Length: 104
Image (cartoon, rainbow, N blue to C red):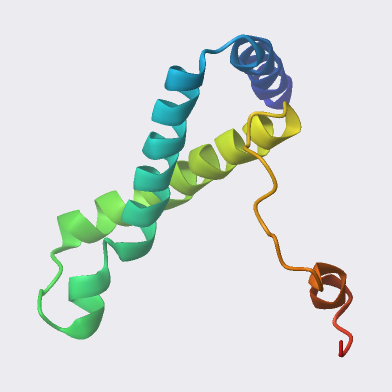
């Protein structure tokens, strides 16, 4: 089963490498929508504004990890293929943040 997903991701890498920028932008938007919906879908239930039924809970718990994995996999593949955009972090002392040291 794992080999099937490797084959699928390999074919996706070949496909993504030749995508147009418009399609890439659409995929980034869809990925952001998926990840934000996974993070903020249970917001009303957490704040007490909505009482979650068993069916809603089952649907969310059944699909949350799959949706999160799909969203993150596109980000990883797009960045690995150089379609993740230009330099995202323009902070000069970025190396200090990575190493966890104090910077002046």
